[in-house]
Length: 150
Image 1: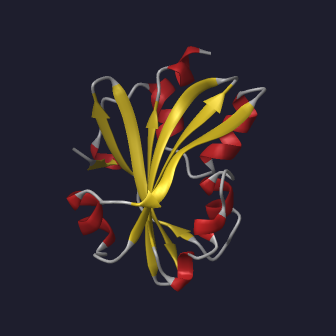
Image 2 (image 1 turned 60 degrees about the horizontal axis):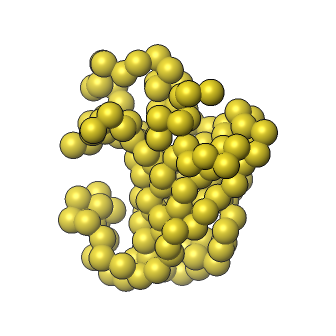
Image 3 (image 1 turned 90 degrees about the vertical axis):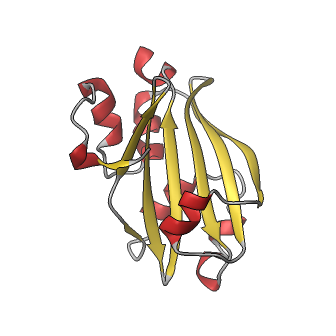
């Protein structure tokens, strides 16, 4: 279940510093770890969960991108992005193994919406919508415990 960040009160401070952050997660991970890398698990047209479809208000063709973000060779974040296939997202769909965050945060015309938070089975996650032209892209990030262990 997802809630707006300001409605969740039981977030440990060491988690909150990652959840409540409006900079690029990629940039923040590069600051924390000596070695940062990305492992693209998949990027293909795929079925989108009902709640994701409703949030995006999009029922057309979408690409689901799932990646692991690694710090010092350990998985620290799992990210799932829903990218509707439109004229606005053509460049985004060609980034390959480049981090999505670098593209989204380096374009001043791309706007980020409100953060939503979830906590399930000991894992904290956040998601937000980025607006590119008239297209909404959903980015969900789940923080693996390895992130806090360092």
